[in-house]
Length: 261
Image 1 (tube, rainbow, N blue to C red):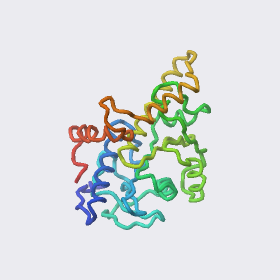
Image 2: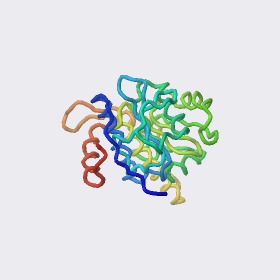
Image 3: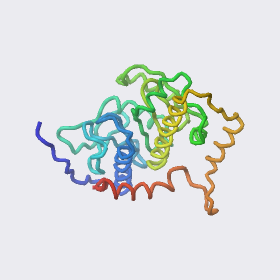
Image 4: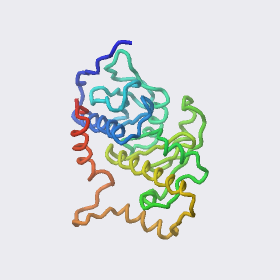
């Protein structure tokens, strides 16, 4: 197969949509940079502010290749509204998972889904995620959704969002991880931390030594401290992920620039 040009003209869109596209493209490349990809599988979606439309990756592109202009615009019913590609479209399983969350949760601006070794390994453990690390205690209420096969059946959407409820992170049993947030920055921060939680837990369990289990009271306290997110400088609290996002973009500009094209 001959090489396909990845040069895509900028779409005619609002400034709000363009900013969302740039942030989403950056998120794709950051997920790649931190080793959370599965070849061309998986998806990250973002809602276009003020609309019921979402942006998804062209299925077949590597995460590290995604640009703001390459993203495909669809509605929550799966209708393609703008696709700059002749050879690429969306993946149906990705549409089902992401549109389900966006349709049910107007507070969610971004959804990240991963298939990492650590995430899938923990998803297959009956115990699920244990609050044995400070990072794990950030996630006081984690949703779980049982495996039903590859997500091609739209009837699963209702069960998936019912299991997610109002939570921001979910373990898809025997499948992987899912995180959502009001913004791309918040969703990226949650999936990064959730992935690290899984890695830490597997390392601790592999030591074959009794685990120290903090009390339920300490877990609640730690979670409340994360939720407060008070700045040591006395600045107003900001949602987790927002403060780090400019630094993440600087990191990306250094290692994989071009996402904003």
